[in-house]
Image (cartoon, rainbow, N blue to C red; front, side, top):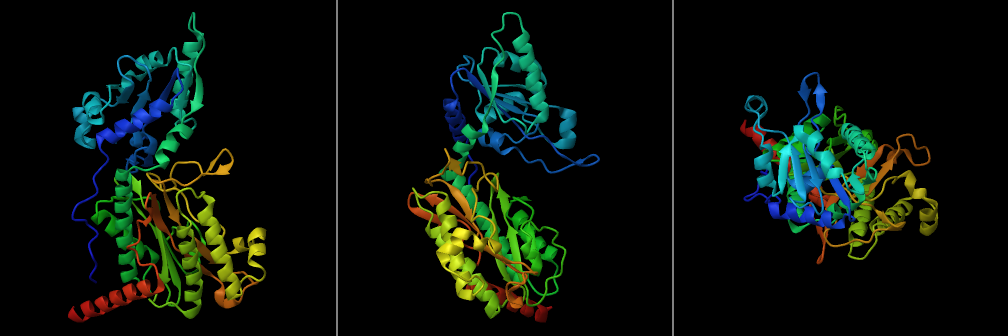
Length: 459
């Protein structure tokens, strides 16, 4: 089977040190006077007995430092005369580096990340309490790092009980300040997101080409993961979903162990992570390469809903506008097909469509697949701005036991999802290379079947 390589002539450039410095400066500028911010790195996670999951850095920490080692802590200390940016990290250790690979160590880490100071993580108890003294407020992500929570509480008790102390600083949540910064992407970030989407689109195309009745869902997953790794995206951004037939009705289905059946649709939701940035792409297509008339009619409703949602993404529109557009297009299509009866406006107002379309049309996308950022501000939907990146993923799901619809419709699940960046010039569909229309999908699968047949004759 011939497949196109996903490897680019030139890969997307990584985020530069100057951009990390700008991010820290922007966050520091938002901190109230007399405050300090603490951002911890992720910890290594035990998988079984003495083996660990592949290390994945905490997104907030990576966003501010570019430093990709565990057991580290970033401190932003506005007004500190010796420098406002400090890192605590592991020291060099020749013996451990033989087993686990090289470490930067504090001195090289400070230079590598463009920070003012760096200290051994083992000195945290000696240095951090002194940095907290005299501060009015500590900004920190509470609840996600229980060990550090307890450590900070211990420091605060010491500070508050010290002779002549004016009291310990209060704790405040950092997420709102930091995640507002992460929500609007730079040009470099959009390039990385575009590359992640490009690799993911190639993976979906490869799976379409391979798809055939009798294969197992995990065999399509294997084609996808092969494409990711081959292109330098070592990890998926989330567990890959390959749901054939009724398995497509389970939103987060990832067992991927059923046989694909002739006449069924298969829903594939898969995206890679490339240099810390995620893609999230879904395609639904017929296992045998040809949509039936009924499958095509349902698919075209979802496709129209997605087109309406993408058209509603524009600067100044609110976050809900794309979803509302997808709901209207979906409801109109369901009425036309006879799956809903009544006035479209009334059906929308009553939420009747939710029987078949129960999730929202998308979410923020960035370093996390469900990326940071509030959807509402002061009780109102957030307005869309250039640099925001989101998914657009309407769907239709007709339960297998829904006696209120004709039997021929039951047990069908369809979702179409693409990654969309909003720029000053309009929308850019980053994952557009993945076949999406009925004609594009059928042509791709027909070409794949022909290539397989030719190879079989040659072999």
